[in-house]
Image (cartoon, rainbow, N blue to C red; front, side, top):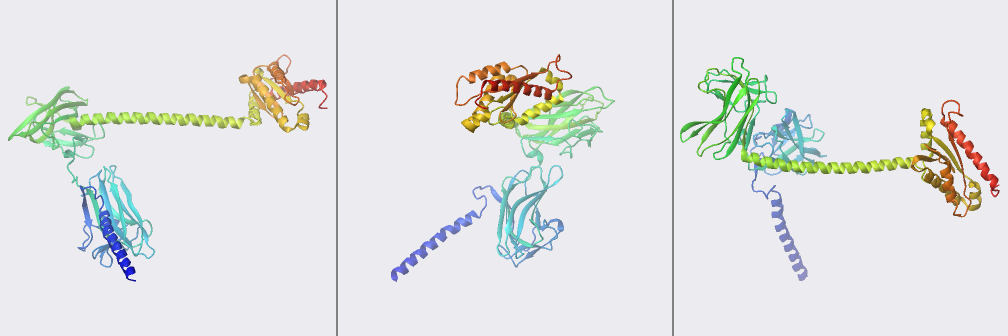
Length: 551
């Protein structure tokens, strides 16, 4: 008894030790993306403050409340009720904390208020670049009434997404449910930055707004649909009052000691101005307390024609507060020309080189993939073509003799009936195996079948590729060709009969051909068939006269 108590104590200790090791592991697994230090919680809501913390009823088609009757942790959760649409539930606009194109990890706990439970979904709604609302389901779980269920998954926010909203809904029905401990994790990279600071290049197309461009001095800027280099709009520069007036943009992305390529497409159409005009792309920046102006490139433009002005420039050390502008006049010019600007870009040349190399690699990969796909497709097409031809041949060929079958013969006759002119140059040969009943009765049906097969082989060898052999009945064959093969058939029959194979073998042959001197009227395939049959039976009668064993 003492030993049993000792063993019981030992087993209990081992059990407690196992629990001790398992509990920390389960807690560690509860931390999403724990192997990535840069993953942080962007949103964490547990409703313990009994505040909604930005959460609202999605579409205002339900009611959400803070409840203390149920909670996954702590004392509170949010409950949705009075729902009149399955998609209406707690929602939160997360546009301010997400970066388009980034990956987020979503986690929440839900529980159903219905005794039968329900299917609850965690979803995203956003507006894409075309202005269309799009919806994406992140997670879908079957949720019970008496147990909190974890919903979690990752989602990538589309690069053109705006007005991003997270919300909870039911797959169907209007069941009430509670949500608690909602967390959104993201990489630590990214608070949103102005577009011009976000990378190694920036482009301005003026399709939707001014893209940060402002007047330099007393000049008017307009978004115009009158002319554009690409797209529908360009930036129209007009009502200048001084030569240095121009459109300009602050270039926060430009750094000292890095070569950048600046370019812009420009056109002017002023009737009062000369047909050729010099335009400049320039930089304005501060250097050691002094405002500096540098010309990147200049070009003589022809009136009414879009031209691209492009050049490279490296900012000196300590340069700051940099502006890029496009100027149309020098100090000596008296006419202030109005002009259009479109497709402006500033590109880090090193990044451009990397992108060029990357594009070359991508192009090579694409070419390899396309060639591989074409090769595979061609192989599949060839294989299918062979299979199709084999299937067609199988449907046309008599399996026993390898001659064409009765259906194919009838199709050929129907074709010749519709085109009587074709009957002028063809020969129709009727063939029939002699003594077949005698062979079947005295030598067995197996030898009778062999006789039919031998007849087909003789005809196929004699006609070859210059005509077609059809099996039209049990031992009856028809040959349609462009030459008379009667002699060739008889030669092959003589060769076949050299070796006696245990039973008598003989074939009656009759051939017909249209003769305009003896045949009246137009050629007719049915008439040729009848003539060949008559000639074949005549031959058969002659053969019967020479033998008497089958009588």
